[in-house]
Image (tube, rainbow, N blue to C red):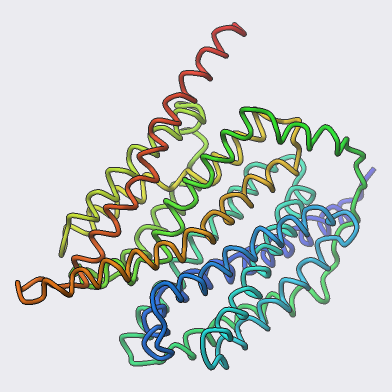
Amino acid sequence: MIEGNEMSEDNQNNSRLFLISCIALTVTAMTFAIRAGILGELGVEFQLSSKELGWVNSMAFLGFPIAMMFGGGLYNVLGAKKLLIIAFVGHMLGLVLTITAAGFWGLFTSSLFIGFANGSVEAACNPLISDSYPKKKTTMLNRFHVWFPGGIVIGSLVSKFMTDAGLGWQMQIGVMLLPTVVYGVMMLGQKFPQFQNVTLSTASNFKALFSPLFLFMAFCMTLTATSELATGQWINSILGASGASPMIILAMITGLMAVGRYFAGPIVQRLNPSGVLLCSAILTTVGIYMLSTSTGGLVYIAAIVFALGVTYFWPTMIGFIAENVPESGALGMSIIGGAGMFAVSMWNPVIGQWIDDAKAKAMLKVTEGVNPELVAGQEVLSTMIIFPAILIVAFSLLYAFMRKKKANIE
C-alpha cells in the first residue's frame, strides 16, 4: 500500500516533469516562429536567395525526424533525462551558432542542431508523460502538445514586438536562450522515473510499416505536414506585402490551433478520425485559396479558415495510426511524424525557389503598377493549394474505406 506522503511526492514529481516538458516544447515551437519572423532579415543581411533560405529552413525540419528515430529507438536505453540533456545541448549550440553565424553555412549548421534538439524533446517527453500519467495518458499528452502552437504564439508575438522596436534578429534568437536555460537547470536536479523494458516484436512493428494503409497514411502525412508547417515557416515572405502583419497572422493561426487541440476530444468522437481529416483538408484548401486572393483585413479572415483546417492534421494522423495500425507500435507513430517533418525539409528549398521565380516574374510587371512582393506571394500560395487539394481526394477515399470496413465488422 502506498503511503499518502509517497503518493503526494510522486504527484509533485510528475507535475514538475510535466512542466519541464512543456517549457522544452515551448522552446521548440519558438524556434519555428522566431526563425520564420527573421527569415527575410537573414536573407538581406547575408545576401541569400529564397532557395538558400529554404535549405537553411530544411535543416531544422530534417534534424527533427533524425532525432525522433534516434531517440525513439534508444529511449529505453538512454532514458528521458539523457535525451532531454541532448536536447538542451542541441538548443544551446544551435542558438549560439545562429547568433554568431557569418553566412549560409553557419545558419545551415545551426538549423540542423536546433532541429535535432527539437526532435529530441519530442522523443523524450512523449513517453515520459505517458509513463508519468498511466491513467490519463491521452489527456496529458493533448495538454502537452498544446504548447507547440502555444509556443508559436509566444514566439510570433516576441518576434513581432521586437522587430517593431527595432531590435535585431540576434536579440530575437537570444531571447530563446532564457527558457532553454530554465528547462536545462530544472531537469538537472530532478528525479526521473525508472524505465520499464517492454518486450515488443520489432519484426512485427517493421512488417506493419509496409501495410497498404500505413503506406497510404505516410504519403498523406507528407502533404498534411507541408500544408501546415511549410506555409507557417514562409508566412513572413509570402504575406509580407499583403497589408496584414504576417507574425500577427501566425500568432492568430497557432492560437486557434492551441484552443482547438485542447478541446479536440468531442470533435474526433463525433466525426471519427477519417471524417476529421477530410473536413480539415477541405478547410485548409479553402483557407490557402483565400490567403492567395486576399489583401488587408480579409487576410485575417482567410487565416482563421486556414487555422481551422490545419488544427487537427498532426495529432489526428498520429492517433489514426495508433488506433488502426496498432501493430506498428511506437515505431509507427515515430515514422509517421518523421515522414511529415522530412517532407517539409525537402519542400522548403523548392518553395523558396518558387518564391524567387515568382518575384523575378513579377518584377517584369513593375511598370504596370504591380507590387511584385504581393504578386509573388499570392502566386506561391496558389501553387501550394495542390497539397491540401490532393488530400481532399485521398481522405475522401479513406473515409469511404473506413465506413465500409466498419459496416463489414458490424
